[in-house]
Image (cartoon, rainbow, N blue to C red; front, side, top):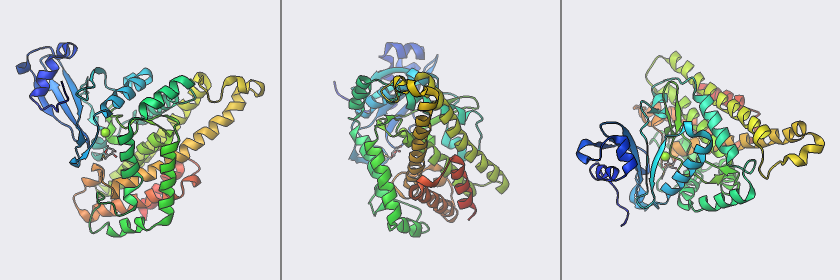
Length: 418
Ligand code: SR1
Ligand code: MG
């Protein structure tokens, strides 16, 4: 037996052969099942498979980068890391993930809950929709997964074993090292941008010494700071929402890295949505108030994150960092709380720099975002992109100077109005 990539027919044969999945679908007969391939991400196949009694999602890794084609091979083992990340996240945040039904390492696939009526968050933000619970759900998810995947919670043996496991997610880390932190800052062949309008801003970025140093400092943080098990690709396309529910999907880039990488990725995508506002058709004042909601969401994500993280620090700190016994003589409440504030300050500073890098890569690197791509008029799109690029640069170069999350909102407003 060997790996085979499924199509809409063979995936039906496959699912009926998995007893538990067939039971969920309500049939073991392929001709009673409908399947469609709906993957619109950069890497994988995604099938929605429906039977008489229910539906599931089958996600299968392809042996190459879907966005580029088979000239860029990519190992199938990424499905194994995704599955392992999902099971670790599920220990603390199962209700924020799709339910997991089946994993097949040979075929690099997993069968999960079909989330309905959930929609990808990025699409909803482009449509100008608000989600009252989003910041709370994302802030808590970040705090719970990052805290419990760190040395603040894990013992030495568990942390080292897990780091060793995820250390083999080499090729996906390499993608990030290249397409996020390196390629956008020189004339790399796969870079693209809105031409000719963005030629000037892109070339200016590539000859900007301060930004090159800033992004390399962030790359150094990414490669060396094994702080927690990360989602690794927490953009708004990795989140599915309804009016009341939020689910986080797709942690195939998971590895032990800096907490700020996940937090910064989410900030970056809210800011990209913010700068795209002036490109979308609607009454300008509507887009202004919607933009404010996007900034408030980033602010609330951070405050919810910090609050929940502080609670976990006080109540669940049992790993190798900041042991309670060390602080008994000075009082844990005051003694380690200094440490907590300094720790969160470090996460914030990293998140700012990573947000900058994540914004820049979506504007002049290989993989762009629909928030901008859906702006049909290239002049209008480039005007939005140039402002977002400027904000990304500021975050990279001046990441240590923002006192708090409100400093980022102020910068975003100032850049948008320039
Ligand atoms: C070559 S893959 C490009 C991007 O798609 C994924 O979603 C990650 O963000 C990756 O950097
Ligand atoms: Mg993805």
